[in-house]
Length: 157
Image (cartoon, rainbow, N blue to C red; front, top):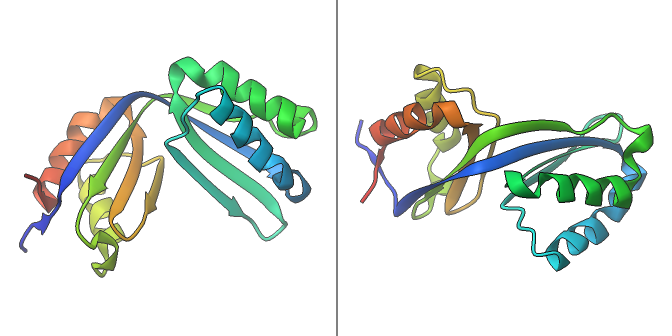
């Protein structure tokens, strides 16, 4: 099978993945929390929100490890997480971003990416995809294996 052409692949180390479970009514406060983080100059390069059948929200986001305390404080204060399950923190993760022309239009692209990583036993912590890119969150110790796996699948200039 021919390799899929990409424009670029980037990775960002020193990241932390934070997962927060909260009640649906608290989600209305998320914009003000993200606004506060923006005002403090804190970047959130990855964020995914989902809702389960019971109306509970799960928010997963990544930030630079050095910002973790400030990010946790912003969510604690902005969402009053004292009654909720404590956020789950996973330090030493890497964001791998794949940029490609019309990447999201390729049938089965998510399956191909995840299958390539599974062959090398890379545990993907989170994944998102759009029309032109895919972003993976993997443990730092899996970075080399991840890049080798992706190199077999993609033609990277």
